[in-house]
Length: 263
Image (cartoon, rainbow, N blue to C red; front, side, top):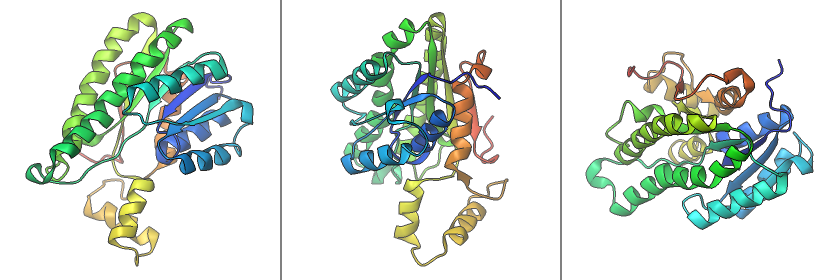
């Protein structure tokens, strides 16, 4: 199936690992061009080398960027536009959760979550908007989580900021529709990513990998009976970026194996 992504330029904020990196792979496989960024120089170089397995060097741009720093984000977006001659798609995939109950979370952690889950998206959308307008429209896809609709007490800061992002995404979808820019969200449940791998190594390094995730799925009562994989999320992102989703805007697609009860 032709998804209409050949030669499109996709910017993936936080695309050097996890869901972002897997999404970059799939864009390249569809003939698109990708720009990825991350704060860690070593991880950025590793991601670039990895992506060369899926597309030519001229279709890949990688840079270090702190997504919570407005100047960094602006420079990355402008450099990408200059490198490829334009931008068609923005995927906001950077994110990191913080666990803790209300009185356990420090004000610094609150500020970090607000910056990462909210202002990082604001900076990226403002920077990329004129480039999407020049193309006659485009796509913005914000990666969110089921916590946005169904908060958990032990992740209060992440849940609260996720809810704010959900609201922002809906508002942007309405405001930017006049520019033919389709804004949507992908809401994640438990997905096997680098973040969960770090938790596994910290909490149960002696367990077999598959046993750990099977146990996790059971404890979290995931109806589908397993933890999701990064490529399953990336597939949804690719669809939303494609020509096949030309009338999908303001939507949130849950990729969570039926986890959660919120409508």
